[in-house]
View 1 (cartoon, one colour):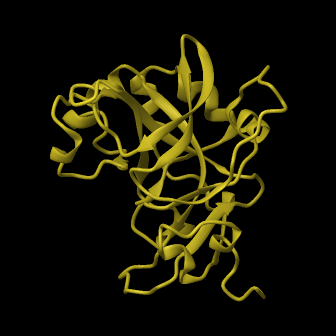
View 2: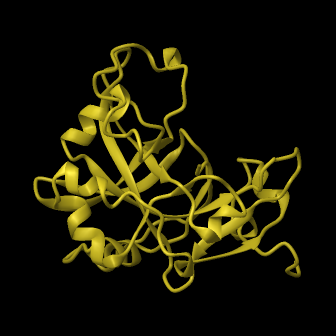
View 3: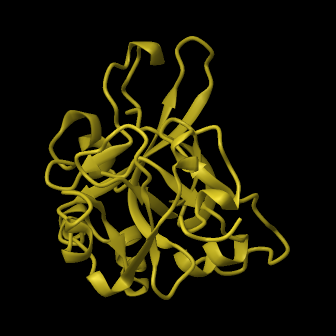
Length: 228
């Protein structure tokens, strides 16, 4: 499971992580240190053969959903790798290869989670952010006519590093998998949905400050025992 994230990346860093070339080097992004489901997250997707960086609602809404959003009674911010190609919610988008990268680090609470527990901040050992595998779709709000870009984080069984924290983890891709993730047939992409090597990951415990989704800023990712 992945239910809280952080994106403190420059435009150039996202471009490098996702293989985008020729983008303006002067563009920048506002860092967000406490991203919760249903709020915006930056994703990278391909449109017309070109990779672009966009904001998407982090809670997948299939394009065929015709009812108001308030009638959606289940969470879709995570999608299981084992069933993403089969479940009606994701099946059409998966068949259409609407795959994306979500350049993000994340928080995880140990289980069983108790009220007030502080989580761990999990991030790459050698890069500014993980390349998290995601799926996107566009949904038209029947009440307003607005077209909403939405996404989900694809999860898999944990590697050895994550197993002590949780029984699920995001699918994390390596630099050498980016081209295939965007361009491989769905059947081949399914084989990529597995745990990344443990040595790619590191973590430190943070304070309970991040538990409140209204809290933002670098304090969200500061080590628990760091001086104020």
